[in-house]
Amino acid sequence: MLRCVFSQFHSQRVACFSNKRVISTKLLLNNRHHQETGSKLSSPPNGLSLLLRLAMAAGTVTCLNYCCYDDPRRATQLEAAVPQALEKALEQDDDDDDETTTIVNWSGTHSIEVPNIHYYEPETVPELEQIIAKCHKEGQPVRPVGSALSPNAISFQERGMVSLANLDRILKIDKENMTVTVEAGARVSQVIDALREHGLTLPNLASIAEQQMGGFTQIGAHGTGAAIAPVDHYVTRLKLVTPARGTVELSQEDGEIFHLSKVGLGCLGVVSEVTMKVVPAHNLLEHTFVLTRSEAKEKVRELLKTHKHVRYMWIPYHDAVVVVTNDEEDENSQILVESSNNQREGMNAFKPLRELLIELSKDSKKPLTDDNLNGKGFGELRDSLLAFHPLSGEHVKTVNQAEAEFWKLNQGYQIRPSDELLQFDCGGQQWVFEVCFPTGTYDDNAGHDMQFMETLLNKIESGMIPAHAPIEQRWSAASSSLMSPAYGPDGGLHCWVGIILYLPTDDEQERKEITSAFKGQYCDLAREVGSPFGAVTHWGKLEMPTTGEHFLQLRHLLSSRYPLDKFNAARLYCDPKNILGNDLLNTVLGNPR
Image: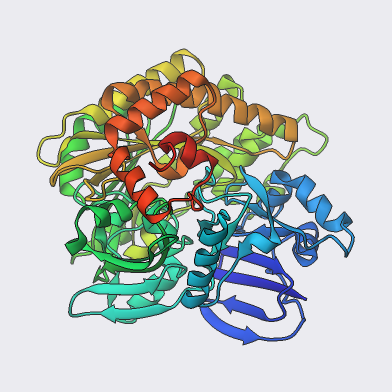
């Protein structure tokens, strides 16, 4: 018997979960739960290839958060990431096809196999408590996993994992105290939908809303806004299922242990319940426009104080910075939208990308034309362009020029609910590395944000590094969570910068070369540039150190920025056998002591 769960977040995003040897089938569609029992396998969503469907049916591949956009190429991304696992799904005999489950993260950069006897999906909190107690008694590793969105697979543990996907109830919406209490497996999008009915929403979002609430807070997710903290700051209460101390409930009154637990990285206990602050639902007016680099540097202080949300997207090799601001809608907003719509009428923003793609393909066996490019979106066009020579600095420079022209044609205003505009398409499969560093205060920006970008771009361009666009820059207020990269005093201003290399090819050798270039030269450069500012890596994007020198530098940096002694003492108290850890966390944090 098979269990296969499909969850459609909205019309263009699908996440899938599968497991084996479970009789009932539970289908989640359009955020409404429908129960279906028996052995019949529900049909996979449109867009998933036959190979993936068969692999899921064979029960060998678990895809914790597989996104299918309106881009046909995305339907093959999982096969490209883990072809061996998929082939195994088709080849395994019935006798051994339920021994392990293969788990792949969202970006297709990490996959592991977990023994089925140690891969748990509890249906209730008491069942979760029993699992953690049993694993603690036996010393059995059991790492909590959310939607596996983190590019570094920080939630992966090949010896044992527990998914909270079934613990997804909205428990209480408290309009008087402006809070929402949910089970940790509830998806952010699901919580937003529930809050919308009460005229409420979350204070901020990360770029996507497929996260489970437990992972959303434990990893220190953030959006952008100089006066808005990362999401963990807004947690008011946590319920943790700890290996050694049972289930504990923490709040502000518990002091330091609470502030350690808010970004606990799943190390202090498995979060089963989260209470967060909420705000009134509101529409945002979004303005997208392009500045020169000198204009972006000159205006950053004014923009951060004038606008609720600000995001910069720097285009390497070109004097163009895409700026996206968001502010609450007012009486003049609709006039701005109508005016920009009139100005853009008849424009084809995709024209620079399409023309370049046609030019590059003219000598190929199957030259592209306008007709066979119809319907292709921005992300697919960019991937197709990069795929010609993804590691050529000159080629990437040409592609980035077309992207800059796309954004110049795409300037304007739009109005939508905040929970829609604060999400955006992150693009295709990718390696991403993001750092965070303090840059003064809200009232007095020290300028580290622009110094970082100026140095980074100069070194990229002088070294002809194939830096795919964009380099994204966001800002946040300080967080009260002791393990947050943005931890600091009230009024503090923090900058977040993310670099990226896309994986636009299915060729395994080329993907390895892109991975090597990214983890080596490019990430090393970002760390070097960030070092004078005390930049630390986003927890969801921190990879295993690749050299002894990198390891020592990383441990020194983390020890200087975080209270690691206190955090590891809390780990020892809550999880003395370290069953919640994994190799990455034990390496960068040290063992509990």
